[in-house]
Image (cartoon, rainbow, N blue to C red; front, side, top):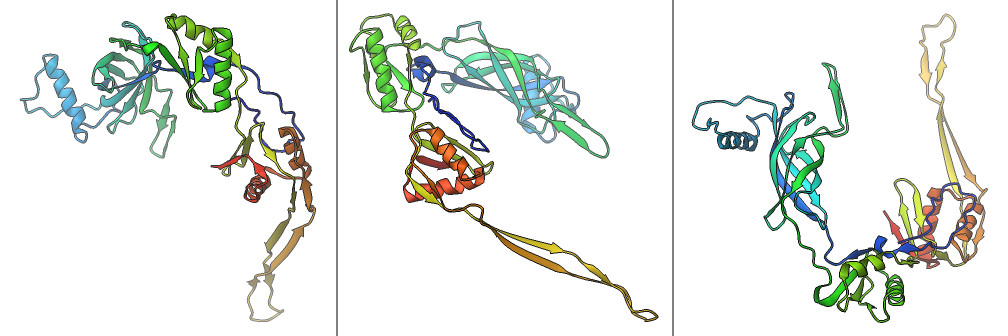
Length: 365
């Protein structure tokens, strides 16, 4: 969705520009073209005493024993107490992009699941990565990079970033391809990121004008169906993706009360309203004084409290009229002319919405 956004914080005035054309492939998803999430469980070795404590993390100890058994080192039937702190159990996650082929490489993220304190410098051992169907689609292995720093002493410590989560660039090899079916039953669907009937209709009109009349139709505010009619799906989608349209934007105001941020689109309108704004300021000042005893007396010096309270009303903001404006620039300029700050704008926008004069959705976060 393209909109003219502005941060209302001390702006003297802005000019709302017309929405710029965007490529269709930047605002839609193609049916069947999607990422797939992969996950696996493995071990990271080579840590400097910052791994799991095997007496506490049973799953790490059992995994290490099982791995050693598979490598021909049998310690399960022997009375050996493992004491190493250089091993950590981790979960490995990755995203398998569409059209990935066997032998390709993808990035992986490694996160500790036990009580390991730092994965910096560790090496992930061979870890199969499965999808939701339980099939292995990639195998990960490699040296971790955490981009974290930790230092400490007897009196304290400091940690920067998260040392228990690391990244391996191109750390997994794709073993299985996910088939992508384009144009099942001769029709491919385009799914809008932001559902909107107007934007969907503009996309259908652009496709019909560029490729062939009647090839595209609007099924709902999110979906545009394209009839391939025996055409090459990849070629048609390539041509559609490079077409440009001007997407429609919804009239919406987003308010973040915590940071005092207001964001609104270019289509926001406010009917003519009158606004009165004033502030009551109360100032309490404590100025304790010392009371000295008289000369040659047996008295003592005491501190007496003295409180001064001042209350004032700021009448600099009088009743003003915020007139209906045809553009976002008129709306912002009118608010700034009334001397409103971001915090004042938030409460006033909420009141205007309650009054029915704000012709937009108001979302408060």
